[in-house]
Every structure is written in C-alpha cells, then in structure tokens.
Image (cartoon, rainbow, N blue to C red; front, side):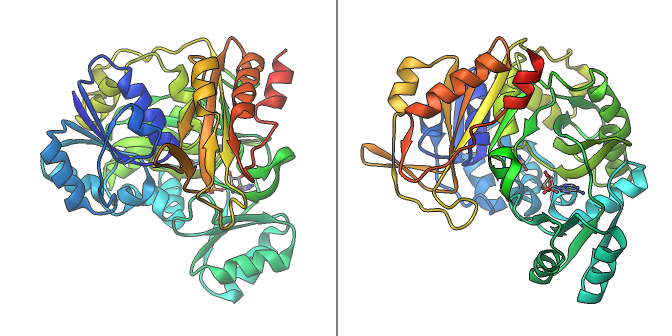
Length: 418
Ligand code: AMP
Ligand code: GLY
C-alpha cells in the first residue's frame, strides 16, 4: 500500500513510524513532515490546508491512502477534496470535523445523541458571559468556540480572568466545572462501525503537579491501571456509538478518528471535548501498544470495511511519552536552538525508547527547534515504572537550550500500580 500522511507533529511521526513497520506499506510519504519523519518517510512540500494541492500531491505520488493528521486541514475540508478525487482517505469531512471545530456544534450533537457532558451556555456578549459565570460559580470554565490548539480553554477561580478570556474570544462556551481524572479514548470509525482503541491519559498543564497554563499536552501514558476495566465498553455505548450514529443520521457521517476527552466524575463519565483526529501526545503511547498493523486498520475505516476487521491486538506493555517543549511554550516559543543527544538515544535506548519529532527542522548537519512542542520521547516497559524510567533516561540525553518538560508524567499512576 502506498500511503501519504499529512501533518508535521509528533503524532504524525508516531503514525509514520507505525506505518513504516507495517509489512503491507510499500511506500510511505509525508507532507510537510519534519526532521524526524524524514527518517521513515519521504517528505514533500505542500500547503496542508489546501485540499486541491493535497489531492494533486496524492495523485502524483500514486497514494492509495491519505491520512490527514491535524484538525485544521480536516476542518478546512481537505479530506473531502481527496475523497472526491476517488482516493481513500482517513479523516472526516469538514462538516463532520465541526465536532472539533466548533464546541457549540459538539454540544448540540451531544444533546441530540443523549451523550453525557457538562451543562453549558454559548455566549457572544459580555452580559451573557456574566450571567453564565454567575449561574455556574467558580471554578469557571471558559472555552473559545473555535480551534485553538488546546490553548483556548481557561479554567480559573478568578472571575476577572474568566471574563477577560471570554472578552478576547468572539464566541465562547461557558460550562460547569467537571471534577475527576481525565481519560482520552480514541475510536476508529467508518461512520457506522466504531472500534475503540486503548485509553490513555494526557497531561494538559505546562508544569509539574498540574500547575501553569493549558497546553496541547505535555505527556501521556497507557494503559490506565486505575481505570475501571469496563470503562471502554461503557464509553463505546454511551458516547462514541451514539455520536457516530447521530452524525450519520444528520447526513454528515464521521469517518476517521473520533477522540473523546472524558472526565471520570463522581456522577459518572462526562465528555469534556471531542476531537476529530488522533490526539497528541496520546497517539504516541496508544500506537506504541497497538500490535495490529496500522495501515489495514486505517484503510478499513477509510473504505467502510471496519465491521469485517478482526479484533485489535494489543501489547501487554505500558507506554509513557514525555514532551520536550521550547523555552516559553505555550506562549511565544523560542525556536532555532540546536537539539543534541538524538544519536545517543538511538544508540543507547532503542528499541524501548525513541524520539518522535514535532517542531524540528534540519539545518545542515544540525536538527534545530522549530515550534512549541519540539519532540516527545516515547518508551515502553513491562509496567509504567519501567516505561517511565526509560523515557526519562532518554529525555536526560536530549540537549535543547531553555527547554522544558514535566518530570511527573505517569508518576502517580505508576506509584499506585505498585
Ligand atoms: P478542552 O480543550 O475542551 O479539552 O479543554 C482543555 C482542558 O481544560 C481539559 O483537558 C481539562 O483539563 C480542562 N477542562 C475543560 N473543560 C473542563 C470542565 N468542564 N471542567 C474542568 N476542566 C475542564
Ligand atoms: N492531547 C490533546 C489533544 O490532542 O488535543
């Protein structure tokens, strides 16, 4: 199979890595990619938001499957353009991707499908905002309605900060605060059949102890030893399948990756958000544990054949990923700094630990930082403790001036599992 992956993050590196290990994949391309992806896939230039350009590239390369990684091209309708050209594509239509592109739309779908989520108001004026904040009380949850790369949400007990965030957005969703641990559950779907993957937990805040601002995600682990073994089945029946059924009923079927961000509250599971694509950094740990070849799974979703697919096979191993971010992320990150230690990780820590690149660029012989989240170190082990040790040993080999990473990824879960 000839596969083209669109995107340039650590998620796309993880996808390309798994695809490169799939014996059915005979040619692997990525656009635009990054310095790390170049080691497993052939890179091409493309404007990832331009459906016609992506389709032309796919045609030129003879791609049989196009995998669209990030949300922005999906919301822009890139998957529609590729599909219209008769090429199989993994990723939802622009209409269906509104599940991620508009939080208000997602709330509407959930209400129609009876999916449990936080109570909420959609507000466009300062008066509506003040009323909604007063109705729910602190802590306040204020979400930019549109795409914001994981940084559009403010959770605060400071009323002025909540109002200021709302004022900076055109349209916001204000909702009740959900307590309890968070779980990211991905499902592969062809618009009808829904195949859940293994759950993971992401660390959204920038600093240890869940302090600091929200980010795109600073680390993740899987499995979740503390979670109810029935959780996946429950979420399939109460969240994932009803949502997929509702979108099909509306005439805008969702095929691709449905990502449910969940809070396990004292009153049960609630959806925090939906995404229309693989999560980053959760994908790094979920794919590290998936034994079923990836290309066949994605192709079955893209062609409506998921019902015929045998059950997925999973490794018993645990996986941990730690994101190394630039100085000042998630503000305006500093870029252009050289990254050292990549060869040492490859020489000393592989195959149990490896680096997945996000914001990196090749400059002559050097790999330099080119974004907020620069790379993520992923490791597997017989349990979370071993996976953590291996991940942090590799992180310690990486040199990047001013970089930051959390030191407590999976720490609590690993300690509790002992
Ligand atoms: P979202 O982009 O909607 O996933 O929100 C980003 C992060 O903000 C989530 O992962 C949560 O940590 C937090 N968050 C969002 N909504 C809520 C809520 N209703 N209650 C508590 N925390 C929330
Ligand atoms: N890790 C959160 C996200 O991908 O949105």
